[in-house]
Structure formats: C-alpha cells, structure tokens
Amino acid sequence: MKFSYKSVASSGEVEEGIREADDQFALARDLKTEGKTLITAEESNKESVGSRFNISFGGVKLADKITFAKNLGAMVDAGLALSRALSVMERQTKSKKFKKILVALSAYVEKGSALSEALAKFPETFSPLFVSMVRAGEESGKLGDSLRIVAEQMDRSYALRRKIRGAMMYPAIILSVMVIIGILMLMFVVPTLTATFVELNVELPATTQLVISSSDLLTANPIAVIAGIILLILGAIMLSRTHRGKRGFEFVMLRMPIIGNLVKETNAARMSRTFSSLLSSGVDMVAAMSITGDVLQNSYYKEALVEAEQEIQKGASVSAVFSRYDRLFPPMVNEMIAVGEETGKLPAMLLQIAVFFESEVDQKTKDMSTIIEPFLMVIIGAAVGFFAVSMITPIYSLSSGI
Image (cartoon, rainbow, N blue to C red; front, side, top):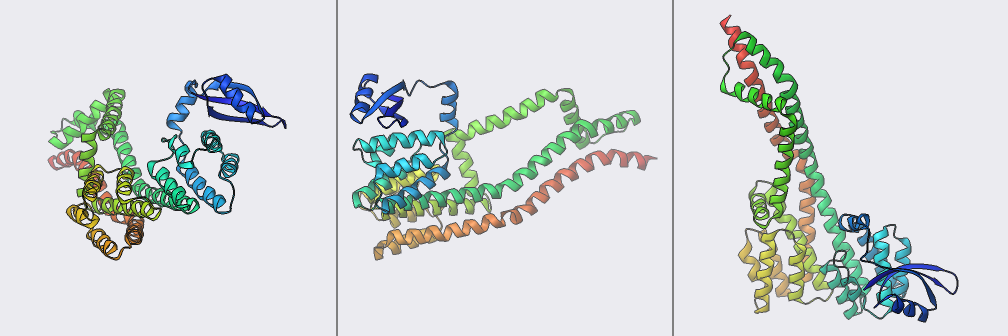
C-alpha cells in the first residue's frame, strides 16, 4: 500500500513524500536505513473529498509535463544523476499534485526502478507515448534525446489544439450572443407587439403566430424553457460521449465543407509526428503504430491504425495499408510514406508530413474567422430577416387596409 509520510533526517531537514510499504512499521524501517526518522504516515488512498475532487478534475497541466520533459532531458544530458534531477524538478514545480508525483518518481528511481517503470505507475499523468519513448531512450542510452523529442511532440500537439480552439471561439461567441438576444426579444419586445395586434384584431400569418407562440411559451414558463434548453445541451454532450454519438459527430465533421479538410489535416499531422517520434526513439514499428492509435482521438483514425498494426504484423507495408484510407488521409500522406519506406527514411518523411500539415492547419485556423464570417452573416441575416418579416407583415397589412 502507499503511504503519504513526513520524516526528519539526522541533519534536521524535514521531508514529505509518498512511498509503498507493507505497513507503517515497514515504512519506518525503510526510512531508518536511510538515516531518517518517521514522524507521520497516512495511507494515500484515504483522501478527503476535496482531495479526490482535485485529483479527478484538477490533473497535471500539459504545460507542466512539457516543462518536465524538456528540463529533465537537459539535466540528464548535463550528466546530473536521474534521482537528483527529479529532486530538482520537484523543488521547481508549483503544482502540488505534480510535486507529489515527482517525489514518488524519485523514490522509485532511488530504489532501483527504471524511469519508464516509475512513469508507468502514473497512467493518468504520463501517456503510453511518454512511457514508451522514455523506455526506448533508456534502452538506446539516449534518454535526454528521447525526453526532448517527447517534449516537442507534446508541445506541437498542445499548440495545434490551442489554435483550433481559438479559431472556433469566434463563431461560438457570435452564435451564443445571437441566441441570448433572440431570447430577450421574445421575452420583452414581442409581447408588446402582440398586445398591439390583439387590440387591433389583425389577421396574423403563420410565421408571426409561430414567433408569438414561442414568446408566450417563454414568458409564461421561463424557468422551464431555460431548464429544457440546458437539459437538451447536456443530453447532446452526453450523447456525444457515447460510442454511437461520437461516431455520428465524427462522421458529420469529416464530411462538412472546410471543417472536414481541417479534421483530416489535423489528424494526419498528429499521426505523422507521433509515429515519427516513436520510430526515431527506437520503438519498433508495431508498437509505434499501436501507441499512435492510442494518441489519436477520432475513432475512424483509430480503426485505420489498428488495421495497419495488424497488417504490419503480417508483413505488409505501411503505405499499402494507408492507401486504403484515402477518405481519411490526404493523398500526400501515402505518397510520402511510400517514399520513406523505399529510401529507408520513414521517420524523416513522417516528420516532413507533420511539419507540412501543421503549417497548413496553422494557416487555415488563422483564416478561419475570415472563412466563417460570411456563413455567420448569412445565418444572422436569415434570423433577423425572419423575425422582421414575421412582425412587420401584420403592420404592413393593417396600413394597406387603411
């Protein structure tokens, strides 16, 4: 079992950390052999509700892991002992959760565990990609290089994700504001016009009746309507997390104009960079393909890489498998992979693919607001036009009758 403990060294220095031991007495004996005296010890799984909430929802930030990989690689290359390098990283980090993890990593390494074995004990923090690349670096004697490669891989993926989210922020804000304005108009503007129509006994067209009915429903039961909208949104989110809902969402995204190409290029870039990084670090082809499949989030791409892994085990070439998925990967991917296999420079070719599509996605996300703006204008214009025509038509009919 794991214990969260506090001890004091003969020098008077107080240490806090997490260690595995059979019981508190075994923990005290282990610490005594290191010249330390146990002060307090608690089972680490006996956490408060607040601590559990923090662990579940407040995980280690990707930026912290990127900094960890970069700095640890630099210290290892500088000749610093791994346990000492981990101790330095533990003192530098500001994240309380990551600090505890680094203390535990240092303890495992001091006991003789390899760094990859220690990292594998924290799967919620360190991905299979991270662990595999570190293991490959240990086996090849190039741990510093492997850590730098994994840091660059995570950094690129993080930057790509931020750019895509940033590009989608503008339309999301515009559409949200439009919905809020529409609700306010239905609650405060339409009732005034409705009273006028009733007083003048004007015959109302179907579109006007639809707007008035919506307004009456919203003003009569605002809490119920808003709660219904929230439940609808939550239901859509929950549906998107099921296998069938996620597949449907991914199917639509892959076939949408503009967005579909962006999805393909993003996944091509992520796949190529991850696969290249693993192969460059010395991971074998089959394992690299399996880990790359785990990294990708889109289920269609996961299936493609699972099939590729199975075919490669049978002796097929990577390009032969990828040629069957031209609806998922741009033609350039298969062509470059084929060249890489023929020349024996597959990792380098994969890296070129990643760099090319990352630059393409970067440019397209910068242009996204310009591309989406005409569509937003059409949507906003249609909504405003529908409302205006619906409310003006009865007034126009009344004035024509006069």
